[in-house]
Length: 82
Image (cartoon, rainbow, N blue to C red; front, side):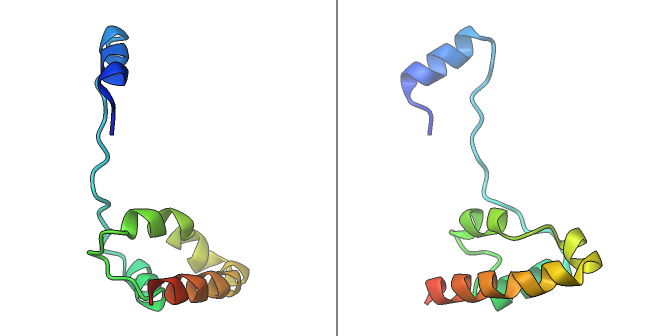
């Protein structure tokens, strides 16, 4: 992810280059249900692109309007997974 020049600059600044780890899906039943509705597997390689697009499950539990607004997004994700 980092090229050699970027690693050198980060090292000169006293910073360690970070490497993105694969996302870990929390053991949240609602999040797993959202991923199933989006046609995604929690262990899928493209999950790092999908998770940031989904709203926080805490906001969904308290906001019925957010749940309704989520359905078109889940349909688009499901269509893209086919």
